[in-house]
Amino acid sequence: MIEINNESGVDIDADALLRLVQHDLNALHVSPDAELAIVLVDEGAMEQLHVQWMDEPGPTDVLSFPMDELRPGSADMPTPPGLLGDIVVCPQVAENQAETAGHSLLDEMFLLTTHGLLHLLGYDHALPEEERRMFGLQRELLSSFAASERRRRRA
Image (cartoon, rainbow, N blue to C red):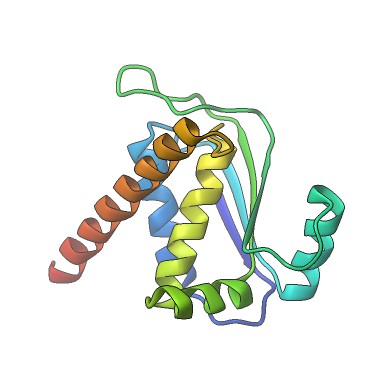
């Protein structure tokens, strides 16, 4: 079960975000019955969370709050159902980053949501090797999702 709650005041295509997360979970062999919440918040709410949980000032783009410490599965042994946790994204921060990167807000939201999901599944980027692994997987997931979206639009 995937719940998306937009409290940010920014219009975001929740259906596209849902398709992205379903794609990512399927690619990572996570049970479709795993529970995940995605919350979109404004800069003030994100700043509060950033200070409270990371002891860092100012709003950030994405925060992940894992629950059951689920990990990616395999085709032979998918991840069992469980509570993945929460991904909190700030579209206002994402909008600034999208402008800097030269792509759409929705593309930045896809990137941040996938990044947050990978954190829920135990990936990190504190060390160079972890960063290469996580960011490589992130690129693969976003690329395969973009291809699936192109096929969906043609159908």
